[in-house]
Image (tube, rainbow, N blue to C red):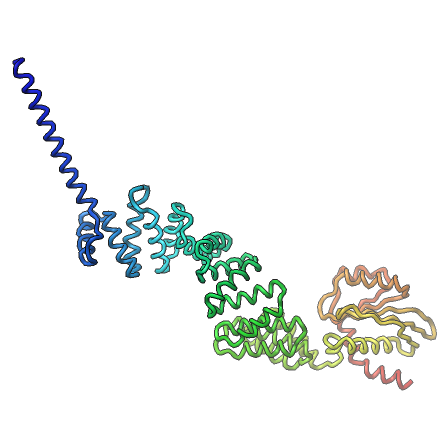
Length: 459
């Protein structure tokens, strides 16, 4: 038995070796089948083999990648989305698979199909793997812009622009994102580069004009807005901006022309049309064309009955249109307004001797008229303040008038407004020698001023 022991040991070792070698061979055979690449065949063969393998294993990574690659090259976004979505799940946490490309292409395919939530998810995962990819940073930046997350968009698009500074769409959205965050200088730089590459990008050109406007460069903004007034899509908005600039510069004829050009466009959004008409009425008013202003305001009221302060303006303008003196008081030139105020002072005290000794004007807000008044019973220095407002006058304005009254050592003051006074303003003058005159009394003065003035001249 002892003699047979070595032989038994040899037999056992040989048998074990055969088993191990056989198992290894089987393993290599199986491994070779699973890892077999699908790159060396033509399209139809690759698809046939990949689909055969997916029928056996729906998550076969090589098969998913092969079909995904073909769909990607053919821009078959539905099929690419399906296969890269599955591949991104299979590749998760597997260092042997390209998890970055799977998620990036999953995100971009979803974006092409306007499935923004899926796109965002895929691209966000891809960026956690690789942060310097132009495709990921641009597309994710675009999505952040669409989600109105403008600061995030700026960060991502800046990174994309750093990788490719000549990509027009990156520069475009970077500029618009900067504009949304009120970084107007940075927006202007990016947008100008974008327009240099794509001169037909009218929306970016419009945004450049807005940047100039916000930065106070009105001449440059006006040039662009004026150029864009004829554009079918952006013309109405461009005309609105150009007219507003001219209106603020008191160039009323040019403002009217701008607004009228904007309204001539065929497809003007109703909101833009109403705002163009609203500002056109303001331009007409500033140019003392009250009748035209009333016509435009009536058009607005027929569309939006309570648009801004249109009802109040209509009431005021209709009254203005029927009362020349009220027009002069509220809207006339400074010289016309001062002449009217002087007439009121001269006729304020019937049968009194009135001598105007000083007239001062504060911008176009009010005029102070100082007069020496002498009657058969008393004489005094009177200060009149004529406020060019149809609204509510507050306590601060009345306090300022009181201080002026004391500086001039006037005995009494009359503060006259085309509107009303607040309760605080009325309370302030209760124990002071100041009379507050509101619109109804002013209207009586304006309605009788010419006849009184003629009477004074006759005497």
